[in-house]
Image (cartoon, rainbow, N blue to C red; front, side, top):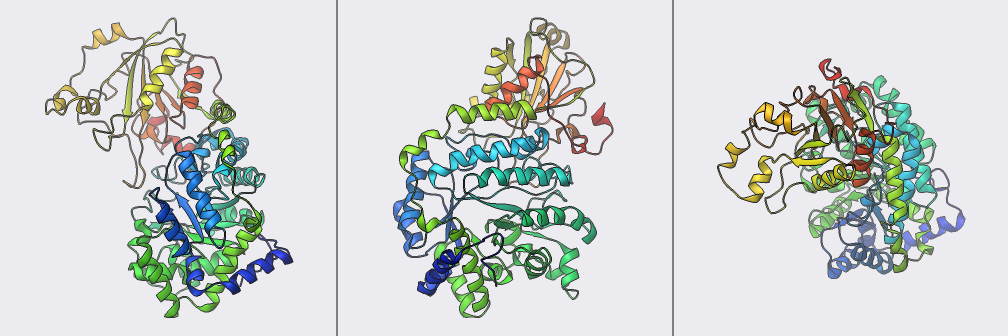
Length: 574
């Protein structure tokens, strides 16, 4: 059983009394409801009140929405729930984690890795300033994964690099920033992502490190965060055979489950060996790493029985609630396990003193997206943006001498032609022109298709201009990559808009060319021919502007890279 007087709760007598009195007053339905964190896909007040009054949810995390709509939604959840709810957000890189519309991207984790822990603390502070006005009291961060495998794109831009000590420093800086604003932290994704290339959204992940390797890396990080008072752990749908078989030698390969269903990893490793006394929650339950591991009727109560205290997201609320209730009634979830989970859930709410707090006034929303956050983003961009290589000695560029630019923008395919192409390209053009360049845009296949669906577009995109004509028109070429992939494919590589496309970098030996990534750090595996390459970390205006200012010599490159950028290849370095 949890000890609420100890780390990370440190509850006093009055707080513990609130926990005990509240649990004693709860019906069984209310107790079962506390185990769930719901997600809202709709702005429907009737739905909110159903989650509150019928399912008695313990927490909420939402998906998108206008600022005032989110504020109103969270206000209803907070004020109308018998027990105040935990309101969570993915504040991994800025206030945009709480508010995709209106929140400010400050610094993604891989930018913090490039610029240093100061950026992680700045990012946390500004995330908190934008999250607090809509009632957020719990952040699903810092991310403590390790980018060991350059092919892994699910944590490539979400991890603080691949150096254990640097990851620890960034995580602690983030925690310090959030602590200033009274927001609880949740690190993820135990037992650790980044070793393999697969995405647990799509398949059960596997951390194949040996016990010794894990202890020296993930184990060291987790133990440090625990010692420093991290309040909660999010459990990845990731197995770890070495430790699972250590604690359960009779475990067969076919019986290995993700950590979310593994008492060996949750109880034996996280609770007992590492000594974590705080709250444990699952990662999102719709992810295939969990949803394909067992029948849903077993997953739902099984995660709590294995040692998780909260279950992240309903599939069908009625159905999942009944699965959990039946799991308790059938003894899958013991009375002791239910009581322990409830004490941890309410213990976190008591630590945050949610039962004493008032929901933020609407006037407080004015801070969201204000200039102070944009200035912080610009500062972080200046510190983070990294010149990975310039073996052709092209930089800095004198705009007066190399003014005529051609922009090749390598983008992910639009979800549909109705969505149109990536609007980030417009920002890049605006910022190039602001710096003094005249810019022509190379059309890709998606451009042609969005303009007019036509089979002839397949032929148009193959056509390349005469080389000498191209050389006479342009002084410099920018090849900008903004590939995006999340829960759709296991790893993301540079993908041209069509086969044999004219956007293939045939021009690198004809016109001075600069390669720029606005997202992942591993694109040199597909673009080794780029002799000048920059990792800019974000497609936001602040990062694009800072990148161009560094290219033209208005600012020095200050970020540093790790060896992951070379992707284990010799030709990426030349």
